[in-house]
Image (tube, rainbow, N blue to C red; front, side, top):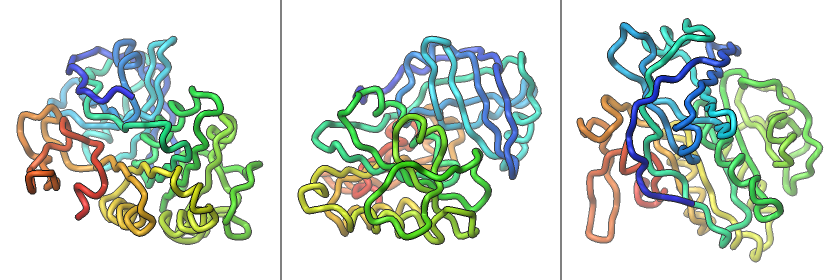
Length: 290
């Protein structure tokens, strides 16, 4: 998969769909042909949420539709900017910069990718799963998603048997099920069919069911809150698995100019400060959680 930085350009995107889901979650579809044709899993965009609001917001891309020239974004209202964004209507135009960031790197060396997404970290996992399914029969991904608020879709019982799953853990994302990709859901909210616990605990059940030969085929990809990513990085370390994480950091400019989103990264020459927006958001887990 291409790993170089995308050129940062502005595109005036028209809202095609804008649907509300529980707990102020929204799925926004934009007509943005250039971004739709150049974005890769892990890419994000920098959106001006309202014409009168200068400060933009970084939002992950959940899906692209290159033939239609459209992109899809899942976001949750957290503050003034996303509240204004939620009030925009079909036909409105939004100024969008992107795609931004270093995407996930995939390789056929690991044909059993384990994708772990939490909360607003779910969209990059869906984008990655969509990308992997474009290679028929090549990958056998398994997706685990966690949320402490209702999922922005109606879970349904999975028709796919996953080794090691606890009894009753059958809830899946319908879209992934339609794609032929296995998924399971996790929460501490006692949602029907979901695993009661953390995504990393559910991942352990899956990993423990694999043979040593199968474990060698696993790579972990993850996006979510910092504590979750730290736990995922530790999980990968415990099982001696490669792991890539997409960090969620506050970004002021999102184009590498302000250095407001720097993180410590372990490199071959020592600790370096790197910007999540343009040096990431995807990093090797052991380089940022060490």
